[in-house]
Length: 565
Ligand code: ATP
Ligand code: MG
Image (cartoon, rainbow, N blue to C red; front, top):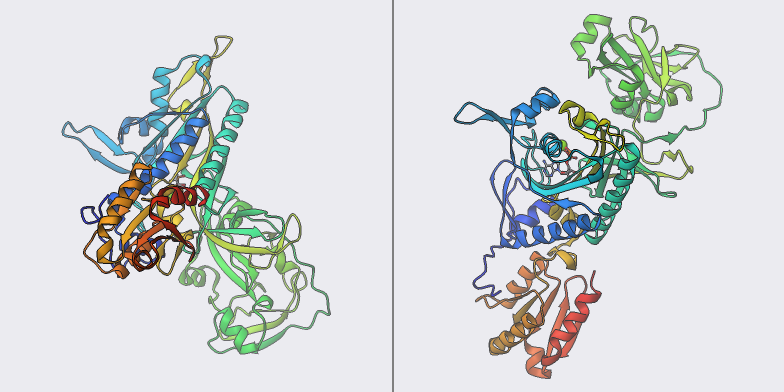
């Protein structure tokens, strides 16, 4: 491809709304363009990357014995009514009517439609297990689209669905797909973690997520630096700290004018946040409850909700707390809080001589001791892990990291086959419901995630297998244009995906564009050629320069490409 003819539009600046680095680089490199919130086009350069990612996914899915197909994006509402998700999916589901007043949705996922299809097409166990997949557009009217293609409204997903005779068969299919995912993400050179996950609105029995590590990610995970234990932050287990020892001192009142939060209090009294008790109020099915944690911790609402077995859990506003309990948020504490249930975190019970609110304006108490001065209704693990906690498995140090979900595995069981009455006949001629699994990969999110992990101050550094082009030939001085063309054609003949930068620009700008776009190798024909008769091959990742004779360029480059990651 001659760059003078190709659609390439790079820029030095990215728009202000591009907050994360991959988003900025994708716009600056001219890979994507935005049309509306969460709605993007992939330009030719970006689309080449996307296609290469799709090809890797295809190869590995096919190798795992699954079949590619294509389902409609527009789905009849009737199927969503049957599964119950017409009511439960919420506002992410875009609903509309056609000219005949028929109701439809734009598919945010395809469980209903595939179940209906397989119900019609498969009636015997002989065809099972069967796994079908597609790489197709999804639409989710996300509340907060962000990060460009990371959380878009219209996006490309690889979704696969398996149909099995029973749970055992599903487990083995699930394992195979998990292995395929591991091969896919390692070919994409991703640094990822596999974590247990919630089944969420899709429902079902077992679920795991592939989380690619990235500081800009929305997902938080806890990770043991020693044994590799990893879990989503809300699910993470950790070892309890040792019980604190020492004398139980007498309770004392202190005047704390207008000191309302842990930070102000720890400064005012010169004490560690760990030694302050924090009381939070939640509205639950049974009214308001108080949750008690140490000042350096945060509530784990998921665990609190489980412990309380409540369907609803919402922080209670200051006004409501004052009205129902007669206390002022900011000066609340566990003593004499007898109008509501008090749930204390395990670690509260292991400390002593805490600072806590006195349930009186501008007043706190010193030397509050759990057990002696107050008795919680319930004790349990209701906090999120913190950096430096000890691993539940090996006692190693827990670190907190951020990441982006790139893939998801679900064991659905019979949820959809029951709702849509999708059955097959087993070996004994009995009618049975399909036991299903579903498996997603965020295809159009992946280029951004890969950039998050592979970039430097000059731009993107694509892993070789998904770079839009493998090399660019750059005539660095006027006199070498003809020769550059010759080398470009010899590389094309050798099967290299190569660009010729024949644009009327300075060599510096050509170098900068090539580095911004992330082309793995530059072939430079400039002063070194005029002086020594040698062509330079420069690696995007390092400063490595190889000098070779003109006729040896294809062979040398092929070797470099073969060894490149
Ligand atoms: P998230 O928690 O990030 O919203 P999800 O659990 O809703 O993801 P799934 O329904 O499991 O996602 O979809 C499968 C994959 O599709 C996800 O692992 C993710 O990589 C990708 N994906 C989901 N939502 C989006 C989106 N709005 N934009 C781009 N990719 C997405
Ligand atoms: Mg989602």
